[in-house]
Image (cartoon, rainbow, N blue to C red):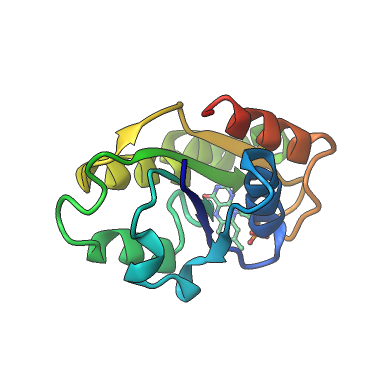
Length: 154
Ligand SMILES: Cc1cc2nc3c(=O)[nH]c(=O)nc-3n(C[C@H](O)[C@H](O)[C@H](O)COP(=O)(O)O)c2cc1C
């Protein structure tokens, strides 16, 4: 298996999740910020995990643009999975805003769609890991849950 974890992170929480995922997959699995990924990094990769903070119901522009720019079929034969970080619905006090956030959705399903659009097979359902406030911290236990989620791909 040749795995790669790609992430974006504004406040550092998604990076922590990405690193926990990388370590769970193996000691030598590279974990790269999306802006540092070159096409050569994808060469020979058969297991790809991509994560982003959820920002306005979507991945960050860097993640969206990176996936959009991959030539068609780049991910043929690759097993992939998507993850995001997000705030918990029950932390949103205003019921109207809570409903908007619930309906708006999250980054992981959008990443998943982009990954399969480039030929990847989605190996496990995407997941979202909880930050207690926009800037963090992550909810207790989320790094362990992320590691377990990633191991279910092996
Ligand atoms: C401008 C902005 C928009 C956001 N939009 C959402 C959203 O639509 N849904 C959600 O659950 N969290 C939203 N959040 C909270 C982010 O998901 C949170 O900041 C992120 O998970 C932290 O990850 P990071 O530390 O890797 O940047 C938003 C935060 C900001 C600052």
